Amino acid sequence: MLSYPSLIPTALERVKVGRKSKAPEWSLTSKSPWVVAILRLFANPESKNLRVLATVSGVILHLFRWAEACPCHGHLDWAQATFDQRRAWERCPMRGRRAPDMVAGVFGDTLEAHLAISAVELLGLLPRGLDAASRAILLRDFERAKDHLRFVFAVRLQHWDQLPCLIFGAAYHDDEISRLCVELGLVEPSEHPRLKLLKTELREEAESYVTGTPLVDLPLLREYIAAMKFIPTAERSIEGEHAKVEGNG
Ligand SMILES: [Zn+2]
Image 1: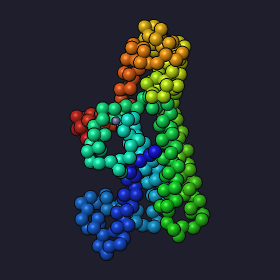
Image 2: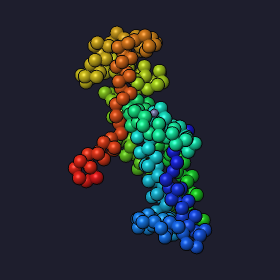
Image 3: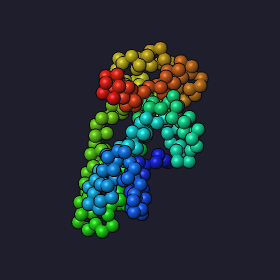
């Protein structure tokens, strides 16, 4: 189940702590005026629009984390992990390599799960004394934001549902999905090098795999599929390094 800690409740928690104290520690000692300004905005009951925005931003942050995590450790409960476990997970070589998951629809499932959670979070964040009409407007805006996210991701990620990208689903851990992707790759007329290899040198093993032969008995196809697990799909860290080289980071 989804287990990454949310950044937004953490910020609100600091506000709550500040409210209990006559001299909130964060407001006196923080060296970042931006942090202080944001926390003051959250503390203001009039910041209800900001809370909707923060809830939507929280969903996007969770998706960033999912995309940059690894398929093997990303689903584990970070809140319960020890320091050494977190360090090991953060150094996993599979981080940001989600091509098979993208084809299998895991991203879409993750998006919907976080949208459902965020709706509950938003209801808890809205001021208690908010009148029904204002609440209805905020929830309507939130629903529009959710629909916009769904639309943008559907458009930008549609290539994962089509060949040649769809062939990366052959590396997904579910045999049924894996075999279906190989089968679709075999009948695809595309001359893409990756598909061409499947339809020529690997055709005999690929056809055998589709009809039920275990991958462990098909050495050439096994190597072909294993390589697809390592395709990088999250490039933010690489772009960040480029920015430093260019002097913008
Ligand atoms: Zn891992």
